[in-house]
Length: 212
Image (cartoon, rainbow, N blue to C red; front, side, top):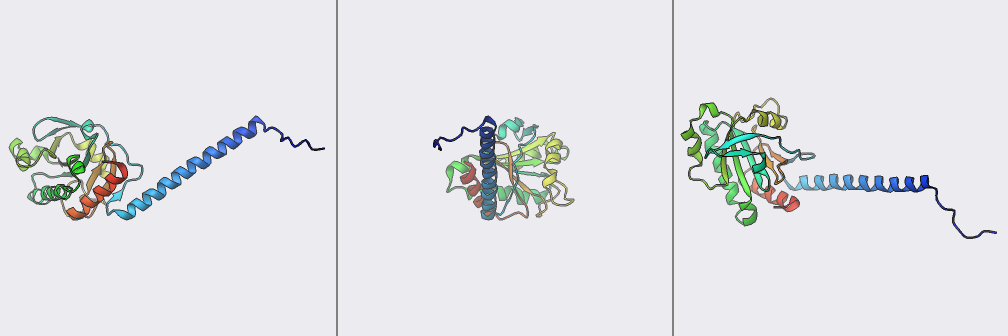
């Protein structure tokens, strides 16, 4: 006669079931995360970076001569452009674009206050102190010029440059604009240089997803 009692599972069976459940949970998480990123990519024009790598350590100086390092990126969104600061074309294009993006964040004052615009000079030896400070003289503190030992950071960014384009060589759609999140991670790259409206819209979307 059947007693109606179930045979107890062996330890190996219990461990197997637990491992199967954990594997299903992990696979579900990664599938869901990948699907979420795919959906997010459809909403923005910038290219999302897989895994969002954290920037390497670096030591630079800002336009006031104050030290600026990776730690200064923490806690704020940053748009970074590495380029030739002494090139009139870059001055005439990049800084006005930064100003336009900043202005288009006015409807999100918290995000606007938490976003910095970084111009990393790739030609510091050709730029005098006065020439380096001058473009930022009448801009708010959110606009930061950087110079110094930039080579390690430039080399780290090189994989996200299209083809054989040189970092910061020119502002014509080949030079990307890099978006860094408040965790100092490279989260997206703007290639082809969207209009300020598109860049600001993407920044708002990403801030909504990952937090101001």
